Image 1 (cartoon, rainbow, N blue to C red):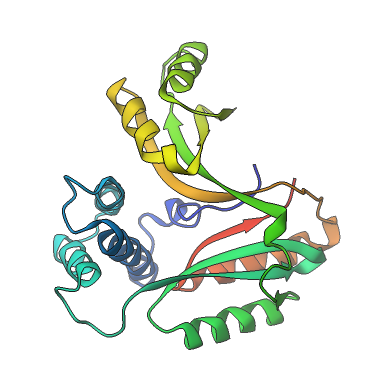
Image 2: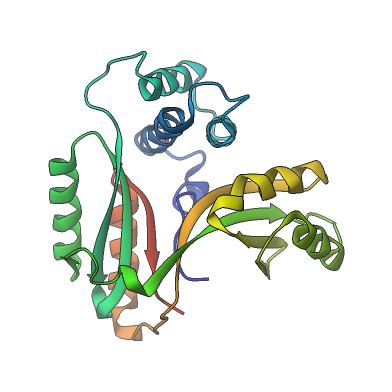
Length: 239
């Protein structure tokens, strides 16, 4: 699939220098705050929050940071402006269609920074609706197969309610209806499968190929966006 989900820029950073660790914790903290705001501050009754906290712990995010993020989401802790999610549409180098999902406490700052990154990298921000019609939102679950049999796991995934699967490098990517994401995730875990990631993502329905002469510029753009604290996810329409 095309697209760069919110963890794609995090996994390779484990053990990186303090500045980049702070970047990870900022991104994760905002995900936790948003989950807490949407479904309450109890992981026992808020599966999205429970999973966000589990992911944060995998990267050794301090307990105090997690608790503060939860309280900020529920409103118990007033620490600046509320965290909001926003989605920007853009074209990158080579006319790559992009959706850039952000979590921010200051939309004016975020739109200015994202626009600057795009412009300096040969891209541009475009009005709402310009590229979003090329994408659809689905549930996305990443399952680690380890030593399990692929055919057996795929049967279990279908029984759990998945719509489609893609296998690559011992990882099974599972797609679900938006409303079925957390139900399917829990169903897979009840069967003993290891869920590495679960989230709502955008996948492209109109794919394109990137001219090789733009590849380095586009990869540099992705790196710059990933380094920005406010950017959570980037999706594109590349094959």
